[in-house]
Image (cartoon, rainbow, N blue to C red; front, side, top):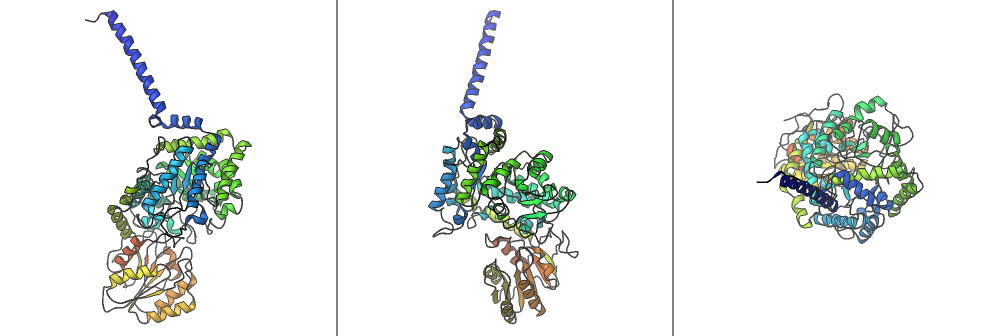
Length: 599
């Protein structure tokens, strides 16, 4: 038996052992960053960083504008040597903490490129990996169009009436993004598109009702972040009621504070409640908040409204700072300093190599001169590091496997889900006994359009059964206003057709030439259906047409990534498949939100 003295000794030894064990665990944790909680890792990392490395975390570098979309021999080839040299310099010399990729590429190529960027970052930035980001509003296909899943634009997602569609898009996009090395997506767009003439948001928005935008935005954020990719509602505090494109103009909106709070802010608040870890600012002057500065540069907007009033705790990232709304008025360096002073955490330093370098240097000089305090700098870096920890970027990085990337991005289940969503999005708005068309070898169909007409005619040819004629304005989707001579040619071709399919495209108001073309073809009295590839509002300019379908498939950049999954769905619908969509925006009193016909 153990006497009291022996028992006492055992207790002492046990206590000493526990102390030694706990101390050992602490030591192991301090040696292995993977065992540290977010706060401890962020503080330890912050303490180990130089001033330049801290400044670097505040800047997002990019492949340069002048070469981002061009490759010498292969449109989807590897980055040029110039791009590689530039990105190495931005990461190793200027210590960029994040990057945005504008290149198009293939799955394996993109995975290799992103892995190389991460290796440079871990070597040069106190062991901290990068946020690697991209605009992925309609899937990874926005960057890897040839090999990844493309979804309808967000207005098409809302047209399904099913938040699960938004969740699935977020989920699948996240899985494909991670497989190719992306960990940050600039989506969803939660601007409420209340202005039909909005030239920059349009079908990128979920619609005109903040309740729908909020519901769809929440679902997409959950789908993305639950599967490992940082989501970013944009463009705070709302870009849905503008008539100018901030890529080219500094826009001002004059609605009152009540309108801002009741319509434009609720989707952002819903996104934050859903756990969104980032938000993007808008280069728009909201007079009710700050009558002189765009939100990106406005302390009342970013610190007052977003941080203090709405309680947002995540990363504030600016929209691209090379957009004319900012660059033409302030320039890269001055604007970067103003944005950080306003409350931004990360400056999206797009533009030339010189502009990007100017951004880093201007922020560092502002810190040296005391215009940006150490406390202000540390607040942003600490916030960025905490969220990097949340996404697993605190102990190395999950290196994408180039050999497996293609397998993930071409997953047949992903394509099937995207096809199902597209089918549910197609909206039959008007039908005076015209649709569906029959498959008939005796009938000749004219397919007319101004964008992707050849591809659409090919799909119609497979479905129609008979001869298909094609009229194409032929000047590219960005020049979509047919001349009188071109319209006469279309009329002559229509004389030889039994039925007509006209595909319109607009990113703001329907061009006058397209409206005249639709009217001229409708007057001929033949069975005719109009399909809107871009904004659904086209019908308001051509109310005489007997049948009208909305697809929401092309945004203001119609020549970026095509959406064949939507085109296949609309052709199926034109020739008999039941339409499934409902309008997310109103087209006058006759066609309210929620309207959608069936056969």
